[in-house]
Image (tube, rainbow over all chains, first blue to last red; front, side, top):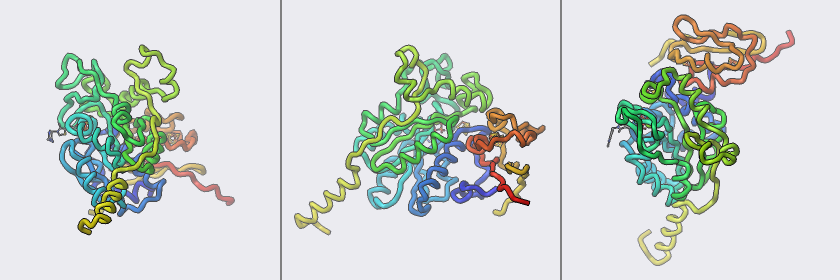
Length: 275
Length: 80
Ligand SMILES: Cc1ncc(C[n+]2csc(CCOP(=O)(O)OP(=O)(O)O)c2C)c(N)n1
Ligand code: SF4
Ligand code: SF4
Ligand code: SF4
Ligand SMILES: [Mg+2]
C-alpha cells in the first residue's frame, strides 16, 4: 500500500502520537499531498512549528524540520527565510500557538509580507495542555478554563490576516480534505505571506467538553458550522453567527520582504558598504 | 527500526483496499463517512471492506484517515 504519503514521512515515527481521530493527521496528509502535487524537492523545504499537539507535525515529515518554542515558530521561520530565501518555508501552528502567545508575530509577519506559508490547525482549543480556551474558541463553548462557557469574542483569523497584510488567505476544514489540499497548494505556490486556517477536531480536549464524544461527531459538527464563501456572502448577520466561511478569501501580489531586503543590500553595496 | 507491516488487502476486479492495522486507531471516521457503507468495523473497531463491490473509489476514507491506515487503489482491468 505505497502511496505518495510514504515518500514524505519518517515511517519509523508511526503510528503517530495523536489521539484516535485527531484532525492533525488529516492536515498532515493534506500538506503532503499538496507538496507532492507541486513536485517540490524535499531537501529544499523547511517545516517549522511551535509547541502544541499540532506542532508535532514537524516530527513526522521527511523535510528539513524545526520544532521550536511555543508561539515563536514565525520568528524562527523568518530567520531561516532571510538567511536563505531559496528555501520553501512552511510554518505549522496551533490556534493557541498562532493567535495567543504568537499573535504579535503573526500580524507582523503578515504586515511584512515575508514569503512563508503559515498553516494554522484550528481545533479551537489548547489541545496539548488539557483544553484551556484560546483566542479562537467560539463564544459560549466550553473549555477547562471556561467551565461556564467562554465569554470572549474569538478572532476571525481570516479577517485578521487580511487586515494585517497577508498576500494569500484561505480557510478549509478536515471534513473537506480535497479542498484543504488545494488551498494549501495555492498558498505554498504564492509568493509572500500566505495563511491557511484549517478547522480541525480535537475529540479529546474540545469534543469531550462540548458534548461531542467521537471523532465522527466532531467532523459532523465541523461540516454543520461551515459554508462556502459564496453561501456565506448571502447570509444575514444573524445567519452568520456561529458559522465559518470556507474557501479562498484573498490572493494578491505585493513585494515580499526578502525581495525588498535584497534591494536594500544592493543599495548599501552601491554606496560602498561592506560586501 | 524495521516494523512488521500487518497490512490487510481486500480486492475485487476494480478496487484494492489496504488496511494497515498497526497504524489504525479505530477512530471510526472512515466507517462513518463512507458514502456507500463499504466499511464495517470489526470487533476492534478497525474497518473491514465487507461491501467492497459497492466502493466507488472516492478515496474519502483514505483522505480523512488521520493515521494513513487505509488506502484505495484502482485495479487495472486486464483482458484475461
Ligand atoms: C512559553 C510557553 N507557555 C506555555 C506553554 C504550555 N503550552 C504548551 S502547548 C500550549 C497550547 C497548545 O494549544 P495550541 O497552540 O492550540 O495547539 P494544540 O495542542 O491545540 O494543537 C501551551 C499553552 C509552553 N509550552 N511554553
Ligand atoms: S489532545 Fe486533541 S489535539 Fe492533542 S492529540 Fe489529542 S485529539 Fe489531537
Ligand atoms: S473509496 Fe469511498 S466508497 Fe470506497 S471505501 Fe473509501 S469512502 Fe467508501
Ligand atoms: S479512519 Fe483510519 S484510523 Fe480511523 S478507523 Fe479508519 S483506518 Fe482506522
Ligand atoms: Mg489548538
